[in-house]
Image 1 (cartoon, rainbow over the protein chains, first blue to last red):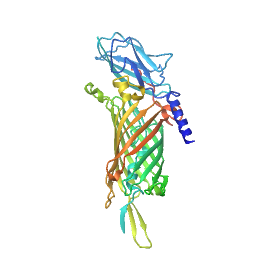
Image 2: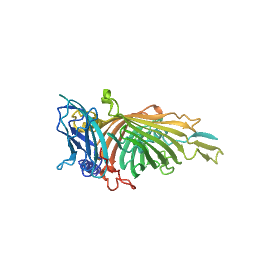
Image 3: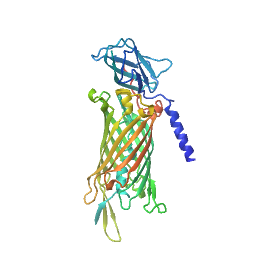
Image 4: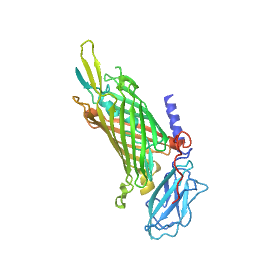
Length: 120
Length: 327
């Protein structure tokens, strides 16, 4: 009986962790990958751990001088609400900072930043 | 008249384990996610459930006594920055004589903690909180060392992530440090017991303690999402290697006793999911008074604020947070 109870608890937790609720949306991964060196991308894509809302969810890409390199507004992918992406201008070689701030479905706000490099 | 120290039935062990039951709370500041630590409480204020927390240790007494503790803690936010938590602990003391000898079991005194987060800086990943823990006297079983008096412990908590370190030491950015400094004050300084047979009065002192601890963490989730994504497997990217240290130093009202600083240093690891975390640590006593063998501490910790964000996981007063502002 004890093992059944423990197994049921573990199954419940696994079920919970594959996403049945909305929560703090933290950055899971990005393209370009965090810290990596890439060729100039057309789009910067961020995948979060939870669904995010288009309204008030933003990405800003800045060059090393602080100039804004966005070529449009950040939008949430309609088929994958964990994906937020923004088009960017042609990026010369250098280091770029991505600042993000998102609003998850339950109104939790999270923010963060990372850098990536563009090679010639 | 005689004077002696009024400690729990198993003095060293009781002191070492006193802080384990109250360890809970996760927190986010900018890029930084501070997981709930196991041995010390961290600066976070949140809705969460830490159950169970299991620890197995062996005291430094002669003969040593093996102790199993099973505890839980429920923390509820009243406002976004203020929470109240309640944590019972059930203890079983294994008798030195082995399985055939009689041990002792029962609840420790119930502990309630009031915590207020007064500072959070997302840019510098810095959090500070203050709290008051109350261990309610006579709410537990004296057979397992529960005190007959109430103890109050005002505590300062802090957490600092090092994401603002320069590029030259980028590899150190996933490091975070959290800590606590508290001072426990018994509700009564001593207990006097008159023995009518001998005519003697036995006085038990109730010492005051400085409770302090640190945790040093290296967050692989932070490494992946804010520093450098090495493309490691998802399981590895959710690990937070950690070393915790928890100490109790007698500070006042312990004259004539043999009390000295006790504590443990606990290397371990925490696996962080989206809705819960699992932690496992080894407990290394810092001296004989703190224990005899390496113990173990394990915890399942559930993030109620993430699981039930619109019901039991949100503050009673006020919304979770204000909507995000565009840049």
